[in-house]
Length: 167
Image (tube, rainbow, N blue to C red; front, side, top):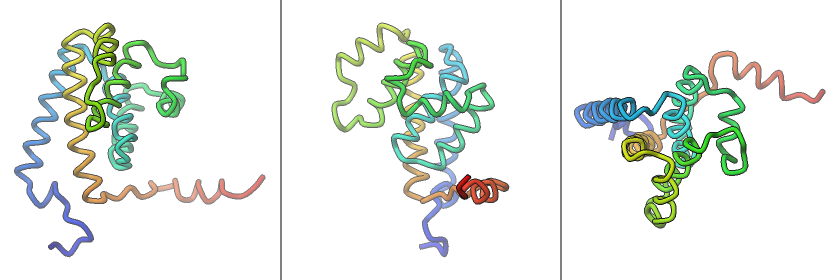
Protein backbone atom coordinates (compact mmCIF):
# COMPACT_ATOMS: atom_id res chain seq x y z
CA UNK A 1 0.00 0.00 0.00
CA UNK A 2 1.07 3.58 -0.45
CA UNK A 3 2.66 5.72 2.22
CA UNK A 4 -0.45 7.96 2.22
CA UNK A 5 -3.18 7.15 4.72
CA UNK A 6 -5.44 5.97 1.89
CA UNK A 7 -4.85 4.97 -1.69
CA UNK A 8 -5.68 7.93 -3.90
CA UNK A 9 -7.55 6.20 -6.73
CA UNK A 10 -7.26 9.11 -9.16
CA UNK A 11 -3.46 8.92 -8.90
CA UNK A 12 -3.05 5.17 -8.42
CA UNK A 13 -4.92 4.08 -11.55
CA UNK A 14 -4.74 7.18 -13.70
CA UNK A 15 -6.09 5.58 -16.90
CA UNK A 16 -9.29 4.54 -15.11
CA UNK A 17 -9.72 8.00 -13.60
CA UNK A 18 -9.01 9.65 -16.96
CA UNK A 19 -11.71 7.44 -18.51
CA UNK A 20 -14.15 8.55 -15.78
CA UNK A 21 -13.23 12.19 -16.44
CA UNK A 22 -13.86 11.66 -20.17
CA UNK A 23 -17.17 10.00 -19.33
CA UNK A 24 -18.05 12.98 -17.14
CA UNK A 25 -17.26 15.38 -20.00
CA UNK A 26 -19.47 13.35 -22.36
CA UNK A 27 -22.28 13.39 -19.81
CA UNK A 28 -21.86 17.16 -19.43
CA UNK A 29 -22.26 17.60 -23.18
CA UNK A 30 -25.36 15.39 -23.20
CA UNK A 31 -26.80 17.51 -20.37
CA UNK A 32 -26.05 20.79 -22.12
CA UNK A 33 -27.52 19.49 -25.37
CA UNK A 34 -30.68 18.50 -23.45
CA UNK A 35 -31.04 22.03 -22.09
CA UNK A 36 -29.82 21.33 -18.56
CA UNK A 37 -28.38 24.65 -17.44
CA UNK A 38 -25.55 25.08 -14.95
CA UNK A 39 -27.93 25.95 -12.09
CA UNK A 40 -29.96 22.76 -12.45
CA UNK A 41 -26.87 20.62 -13.03
CA UNK A 42 -25.15 21.88 -9.89
CA UNK A 43 -28.29 21.61 -7.73
CA UNK A 44 -28.55 17.95 -8.68
CA UNK A 45 -24.82 17.27 -8.17
CA UNK A 46 -24.74 19.04 -4.80
CA UNK A 47 -27.83 17.20 -3.56
CA UNK A 48 -26.54 13.78 -4.63
CA UNK A 49 -23.17 14.50 -3.03
CA UNK A 50 -24.86 15.62 0.20
CA UNK A 51 -26.96 12.46 0.33
CA UNK A 52 -23.89 10.30 -0.34
CA UNK A 53 -21.96 12.13 2.40
CA UNK A 54 -19.21 13.32 0.06
CA UNK A 55 -17.85 16.52 1.57
CA UNK A 56 -15.22 16.90 -1.13
CA UNK A 57 -17.73 16.82 -4.00
CA UNK A 58 -20.17 19.03 -2.08
CA UNK A 59 -17.45 21.69 -1.85
CA UNK A 60 -16.54 21.37 -5.54
CA UNK A 61 -20.14 21.63 -6.70
CA UNK A 62 -21.14 24.38 -4.27
CA UNK A 63 -18.27 26.44 -5.71
CA UNK A 64 -19.45 25.68 -9.25
CA UNK A 65 -23.05 26.33 -8.26
CA UNK A 66 -22.23 29.73 -6.82
CA UNK A 67 -20.38 30.54 -10.04
CA UNK A 68 -23.55 29.48 -11.90
CA UNK A 69 -25.69 31.86 -9.82
CA UNK A 70 -26.87 29.70 -6.92
CA UNK A 71 -27.35 31.71 -3.74
CA UNK A 72 -26.59 30.70 -0.17
CA UNK A 73 -30.36 30.37 0.32
CA UNK A 74 -30.72 28.04 -2.68
CA UNK A 75 -27.97 25.80 -1.30
CA UNK A 76 -29.31 25.90 2.25
CA UNK A 77 -32.81 24.98 1.04
CA UNK A 78 -31.60 21.79 -0.68
CA UNK A 79 -31.89 19.86 2.58
CA UNK A 80 -35.59 20.74 2.75
CA UNK A 81 -36.43 21.05 -0.93
CA UNK A 82 -39.83 19.34 -0.56
CA UNK A 83 -40.99 21.95 1.95
CA UNK A 84 -39.22 24.89 0.32
CA UNK A 85 -40.76 27.19 -2.24
CA UNK A 86 -37.48 28.25 -3.87
CA UNK A 87 -37.25 25.47 -6.48
CA UNK A 88 -39.14 25.21 -9.76
CA UNK A 89 -41.16 22.13 -10.68
CA UNK A 90 -38.33 21.08 -13.02
CA UNK A 91 -35.72 21.46 -10.26
CA UNK A 92 -37.92 19.55 -7.81
CA UNK A 93 -38.33 16.71 -10.32
CA UNK A 94 -34.55 16.55 -10.79
CA UNK A 95 -33.95 16.56 -7.01
CA UNK A 96 -36.42 13.71 -6.56
CA UNK A 97 -34.69 11.77 -9.32
CA UNK A 98 -31.35 12.42 -7.57
CA UNK A 99 -32.67 10.80 -4.40
CA UNK A 100 -33.79 7.73 -6.35
CA UNK A 101 -30.36 7.37 -7.95
CA UNK A 102 -28.51 7.76 -4.66
CA UNK A 103 -30.77 5.22 -2.94
CA UNK A 104 -31.15 3.03 -6.04
CA UNK A 105 -30.61 -0.09 -3.92
CA UNK A 106 -33.87 0.51 -2.03
CA UNK A 107 -36.53 0.69 -4.75
CA UNK A 108 -34.78 1.69 -7.95
CA UNK A 109 -36.80 4.47 -9.55
CA UNK A 110 -40.36 3.60 -8.49
CA UNK A 111 -43.03 3.79 -11.19
CA UNK A 112 -44.85 6.64 -9.44
CA UNK A 113 -41.64 8.71 -9.31
CA UNK A 114 -40.82 7.84 -12.91
CA UNK A 115 -44.30 8.94 -14.00
CA UNK A 116 -44.28 12.12 -11.90
CA UNK A 117 -40.78 13.16 -12.98
CA UNK A 118 -41.49 12.12 -16.57
CA UNK A 119 -44.52 14.39 -16.57
CA UNK A 120 -42.27 17.36 -15.88
CA UNK A 121 -38.94 16.58 -17.54
CA UNK A 122 -38.64 15.81 -21.23
CA UNK A 123 -37.11 12.47 -22.14
CA UNK A 124 -33.77 14.10 -23.09
CA UNK A 125 -33.74 15.97 -19.75
CA UNK A 126 -34.54 12.78 -17.82
CA UNK A 127 -31.80 10.89 -19.63
CA UNK A 128 -29.25 13.69 -19.12
CA UNK A 129 -30.00 14.10 -15.42
CA UNK A 130 -29.83 10.33 -14.94
CA UNK A 131 -26.38 10.21 -16.57
CA UNK A 132 -25.23 13.17 -14.44
CA UNK A 133 -26.28 11.15 -11.41
CA UNK A 134 -24.48 8.02 -12.56
CA UNK A 135 -21.36 10.12 -12.98
CA UNK A 136 -21.51 11.95 -9.64
CA UNK A 137 -22.24 8.74 -7.77
CA UNK A 138 -19.02 7.28 -9.20
CA UNK A 139 -17.00 10.36 -8.22
CA UNK A 140 -18.59 10.37 -4.74
CA UNK A 141 -17.52 6.78 -4.18
CA UNK A 142 -13.93 7.48 -5.27
CA UNK A 143 -13.55 10.48 -2.97
CA UNK A 144 -15.35 8.90 0.00
CA UNK A 145 -13.35 5.66 -0.25
CA UNK A 146 -10.15 7.69 -0.51
CA UNK A 147 -11.13 9.95 2.40
CA UNK A 148 -10.26 13.03 0.36
CA UNK A 149 -9.65 15.87 2.81
CA UNK A 150 -11.81 18.97 3.02
CA UNK A 151 -9.84 21.35 5.23
CA UNK A 152 -10.97 24.86 6.12
CA UNK A 153 -10.05 27.35 3.44
CA UNK A 154 -7.69 30.21 4.08
CA UNK A 155 -9.41 32.72 6.29
CA UNK A 156 -12.29 30.37 7.11
CA UNK A 157 -10.58 28.95 10.20
CA UNK A 158 -9.91 32.43 11.57
CA UNK A 159 -13.45 33.57 10.78
CA UNK A 160 -14.89 30.47 12.47
CA UNK A 161 -12.74 31.03 15.54
CA UNK A 162 -13.73 34.70 15.70
CA UNK A 163 -17.41 33.83 15.38
CA UNK A 164 -17.38 31.06 17.98
CA UNK A 165 -17.58 33.37 20.98
CA UNK A 166 -20.83 34.53 22.50
CA UNK A 167 -22.15 37.99 21.84
